[in-house]
Length: 415
Ligand SMILES: *Cc1c(COP(=O)(O)O)cnc(C)c1O
Image 1 (cartoon, helix red, strand yellow):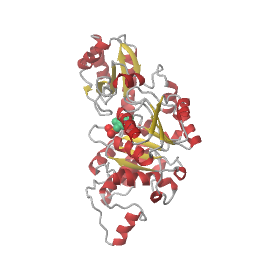
Image 2 (tube, helix red, strand yellow; image 1 turned 135 degrees about the vertical axis):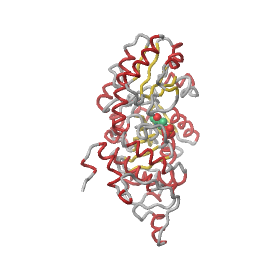
Image 3 (spheres, protein in one colour; image 1 turned 135 degrees about the horizontal axis):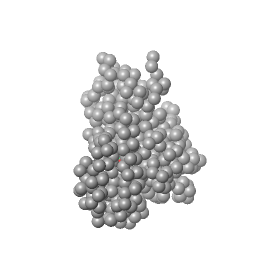
Image 4 (cartoon, helix red, strand yellow; image 1 turned 90 degrees about the vertical axis):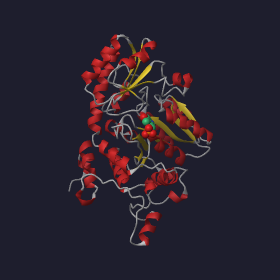
């Protein structure tokens, strides 16, 4: 009998469905669209409600066999203890904050985070959760922000759009020492390039819409429990979810409060599309990372370009950190031109990159950052996050590198 643990990343993923036992020998998990799940005996229905049955489904807001198959795949990819999938990455992030934090708690977060996550920090403050944002590339700044009521530390592996990397290991050691829940948004790196559990993260978040889904055709999010965190010491677990092994308490509470009550449920159709996308994660990450590095190197030597932000460039402030932890540099790349007036004309002269927001589609996407995704944030937040007025963000797609380089060559020649 083949055991998935014996195999490498992609072998494991492409055989996971079959080994999980799909009906009729199907080699992909079927798409289960039923909302209701019925039982022959009412005792079996009761067992699912009371959580005494192993697995089992009752109402699709809490999951279906199709979303469960994707959850199993994600748990395997992050080598975790368990997972929950959500309708979007933001639904997963909100589920963590709103089900695990209470008024009077304190959250320390990296100031280099996804713009909408930063917007949620404002909501948390209104609800009575104090949030301190710090430069998490320096673990000492995180340590200095910790208070007696701090519960959680939140960072992104590779921050969007500036590609800053937090001191992943230093923060992990700090969280372990102080008993803090360490949450890492691993969307840009993906479990193929880096596993946050390896540096002590308790929870990993993904926007499945990006690297893992990878085709720009389905929204989704996930929270994976790495099994590292000791939930028995966490004060915010309701008595109803302090049942069974403490390892499962966090996910139990997040599934009931975050999925059953808040309703940010992933559809089976989207789960199927994302699960299929996940099978080619390694291939796409290798390809887009190689292209992004070639583009980053080419842009860095171009006289019209002022700065390039890419973790695997020697000029990147956290280059050593990137070399140590990342298998490759991922698809996210930003740069600034010497002449800020050329920012918008350059975007228009490029023929291949599509002028669009979003990340990790099969096509290369380009966007001027200050004018769009960080417009609402305002000049103060932008400057605090190191976002210049002429910063351009690229999400590198699957195109052939020679074609992208030729396009940049013609577009920059005029700058
Ligand atoms: C896109 C993104 C999110 C939000 O995910 P959605 O699926 O769009 O809701 C969260 N974090 C990061 C780093 C992202 O890039």
